Image (cartoon, rainbow, N blue to C red; front, side):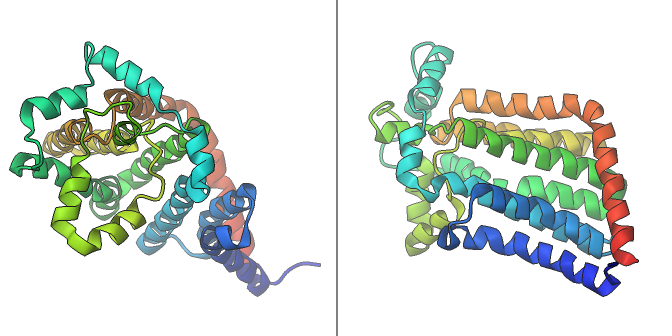
Length: 306
């Protein structure tokens, strides 16, 4: 029996709704990971099948993509004790001590430029460069959508490939950041300056704010903060040298901030850089497969419309 257009559209919207609901309901409903993943992956495809191409649809597709990413970023921490039992703490400490010639680079920077018990003006700038990261990769993609539409798909695919591959690494090899190692006595010389300034600046709002943004504190390798910022810099550099200079200046500032503030090891940044450059290098080889996916989505769109 052939389904009516109305029934097919209803089914597509149901898939979109499932992609929104499954990450929200996963804890209470105890949904298996493959169910959440399947719903999250299918939702943007269903949206593209049922809604004609527009800037609004493009933005909605990105929101669904990041909604699925956020769920998979947080899911390892749905059972905090199980995550703590799996997390690796020591190997990045050992590697960074080698890179720092016997001392953690973050600890060396804090000792050289910091003052005990105070987060001073230049350090506050570093803290804010870290907080502003939440706007940078997505803002870059939206900038392409608004001002350079022909570059939008390229920017979106490159940016969200970095996010998705990074979250796979968080599942496969959960790795603790430096501040956690310091709490466990593996790197006691390190301070977590972002926490110190956050509590001072935001007051009572800090705990709920950090609780919302820090859904998985034991996901540091690779540094997606640095990886996505470097990718944004590359994308901006393709627009023009001034845009690129702004992007790479921010990425460099953020890299220093992440190490100085005790949020990431140098080796986390190197892994993030390798991830970004790997995505850029692999893009031409993957392009034919992505073209096939795009044509399949177009066929699905025509099928739903008729």
